[in-house]
Length: 266
Image 1 (cartoon, rainbow, N blue to C red):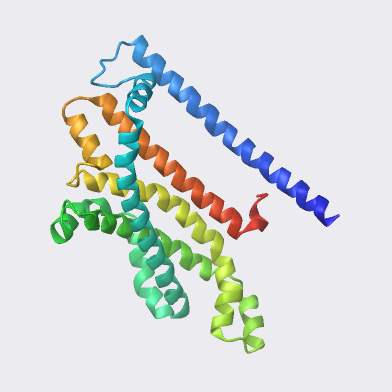
Image 2 (cartoon, rainbow, N blue to C red; image 1 turned 120 degrees about the horizontal axis):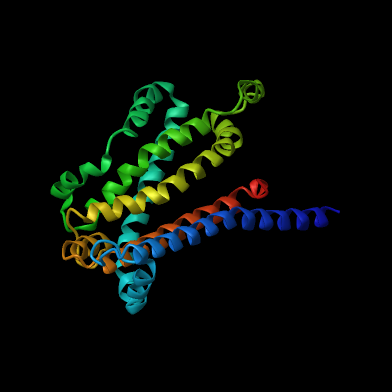
């Protein structure tokens, strides 16, 4: 019986995943069709807006090169995201343990959401080198630190008061309270933050390269091609950024399903 229930739950989760992906796929196809039709119907000049078919053809002309420069940017995004999210989760744990730390940092983290942190990129370029990867990684780390801090802190402080009182009535050490109650409760909040940060990290890495970077990077390539009105090449590079961002997001979703199998059917 248990085996049958497990198989049924797995099938239900797969059907749910397919059902949730279908509307997004249909929307994408319709949007691409409208874009293609509008470009051809209104005879929009190529240097203003190429059609999706032209962008795809440009990408297929040299996919190896575009994916190669995209990998350089993706490495910066991945490294910065790992540093920012890791530090954010660590500081959130400290805030949950000592509330005076939270009183100073959490309001700052909430306020940081209204600050265009990407504007720090020129300054970080001066401090760490405009061409080096360090400045791009730093931008991504700062962009992903505060969302992770706020989200994970909310998760760590989400357990009900009576659950905390129950553990403390058994004289459970604070480490056991964190490990058995707070950390499991914070997992959904952590993965929510990671899903948001996958997009932020790619945006931050690409835009940071607009202010300087190696030639084999997406941001530099997009800026250079757009500057000489080669919009097909620029849009092809944007497509590559989307592909890496989507792969990053799906990797986080897969990790979430492995870490929290009890939520697969939701």
